[in-house]
Image 1 (spheres, rainbow over the protein chains, first blue to last red):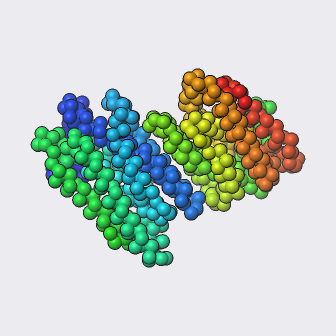
Image 2: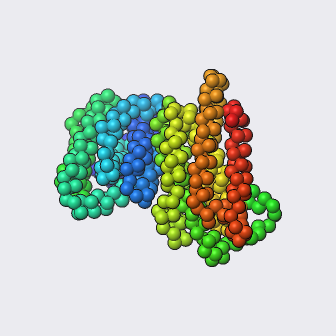
Image 3: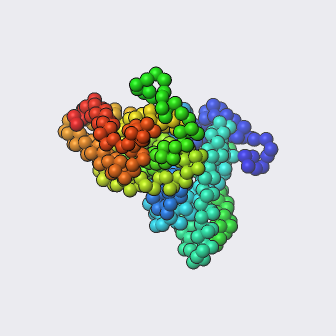
Length: 243
Length: 243
């Protein structure tokens, strides 16, 4: 996954942070990225902890609390990395607070099953995005992003529960399919807002330092979103939720 | 702290779990204790995560989220121990849910400073209680309780913030002193409810297996609560909150 076109990393992927960050625009873009990821993890912590209240049993509550706690530890690693590269973590996170807060406000689950679907969808989209972005990064930043990614996948416990709920009442499937579509729509809408506002970050996401030289390519951003949406659609279908 | 009267543990403290748990009443009392502590940690996780929303800055929010995450890991250890001694964790926790939920409902902070004081007071009382109870336990259960205790003290970050707030506006001190008193009052009232309802647990808390033979001693429960209250009062005074 790290080098889709080549066995050997080239360009930015062959450089370490010390070399790559000498380009001010790359440095700014990575700090933007780490700020966005860090705020995303902290916001996910808050929302999962909140949604844990909807759990029907103590064991279910503990599962969602476990995901929340894992997100918090991701946040810690990203924040510590920001501090290590002499960026002020709060300053780096703030530009992304509104989009992420709005996402969560617009998608507050109204019951436990919606909470489970959101936890699973959120976890999966985050994994896809981390994987997409990793290939654009210098070796040090990539190692961090991949190590956080390695620790995701806590959302899988949700799959079994959602499947059981649909089996026992197929009408639930229709409602949750709509919900999953709404989650993805809201995520894309907020992501597009971020893309529009953060040029350096967006340019790096689609082409790394080489892409920066070539300039911002909106079509490539679109393709990345398409790949993530497609993977989401397949996962939903596998879960019995036709999207 | 483990053996306040003696250098060498005697009675129950000299036994391991395999030996001590052969007494059915001791076994039941420890399962009650672990259930109460586990639910307490899970409830603390939830409330701290909720109270993190009141934080004025992202860094403050991260501090409270860190405490919440630490409580979750305590919960995991206690729950895993229940499972390891063949107790159903949910069944063990349920008898304590009402008292702990009521405590948190009655003491929802109305602002960030109240949240900080609650986090600090809760963390400190929990430490005191873990230390009190550790001396009553068999060596295996004691090791677990002390290892969870070792990992507390996250509440100290709150002290500095509260002190700064009082310095800049002394009237804040009066309000928070009342608040701290209310927290302690509510905690004692819920603890007394638990004591009244859970004879085996209460008896063990005040005398271990030896105390069980001697029967339940309400005065000794009262003395334990007094010691914890006294330590609380000293801490509040040190914080500038005359109780």
